[in-house]
Length: 479
Image 1 (cartoon, rainbow, N blue to C red):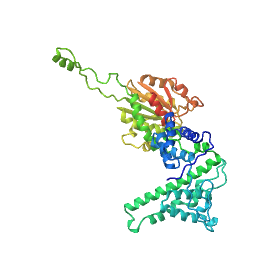
Image 2 (cartoon, rainbow, N blue to C red):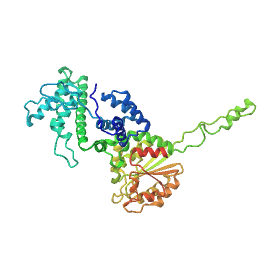
Image 3 (cartoon, rainbow, N blue to C red):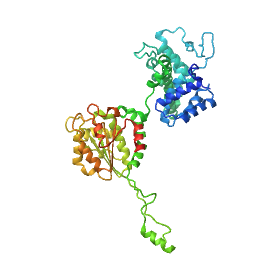
Image 4 (cartoon, rainbow, N blue to C red):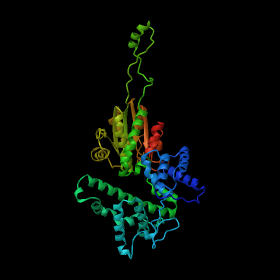
């Protein structure tokens, strides 16, 4: 059985109040939790063994989560609300245990060690624990290592324990060769057994680092408060990462989130003909079939319904101020190409150039962004955004790109650097298109501030706040 979970019985409402706080933290982290799910979570407490932490963790996850991507966030919060409690180690004459059954520092065999030798002694014990693969012993070791090595001078925020101090002192990554030697026989090197052993080593090292970080979070939460740590310890979910602040590590997850949204967006923007479930009436076949029923058209025949795939024109601001958003917009453009008969992409900074050629099927978005920077003619003067000139160049050179069957999609922050915004040109493009929408990565409260012309653009085009994939999903749903 796993180590039991602990909670503060002094909290308002006891166990029920504790669960309510946990559910609220999960909801505040961006994971949607409805009333029915909260009720199901309370029911879980009545059917699982509360002393079995793994049962409790998996049981609550089963009713609170909808996607696998939410699990890392959930696990961090679960570790804060239901912290680990060690089983007592086998008692001995030399060791003492605290009131909660947690082992003291004497669980580590450090006879006569001084500060100079402490790291080496701990490294030796860590090596043996990693070879043994005992998760509970490794977790207990991580807690003791944080106690002995993780304390430092309090930071300005008040934190006193730091995971990097422990990992720097123990340097677990330098133990890989010794671990492989301990897990492999000489004859097994170079084959499948070595690959399995390397994967095992990676998993055990990852588990140890996670145990260190969890223990530091637990101690910091005890010092500063659980709610405060919960807000700073978790990363935003992929669909809540601001496009303007997205890192390279977020792009892969964003790409997976954008693909299904692009399919739904294509359906919403398509010019569907209101002809019911069948195509137009085939008058000739219907009359011919009526001859068998005395000229009465009992059965009607229809032509096959043609699937209409709309045309799309995308205008993307690729200036430095929206660099993170540019990656998203170009990912969206690449995904939309699969669902439209014609997708034409145009990028601009202070002039406009067509960049459709960079988005051939299978093209990598990162490579496309790099090629646009090198090859596309998007900078005509000083490299600062000039929406008015960009719209005028587009309307002058590609006037036929926008027509009655075209959906126009503009993506940018609408900051003109106090240059003419080109409102009449944009209004004419919107009038000639079938539909037109503008996705803006800035919060709506900033529209119209400083050099932002977003409020003025919003008078001639449907301006939508789109800072993350969640808001894009909401836009697609309500379109």
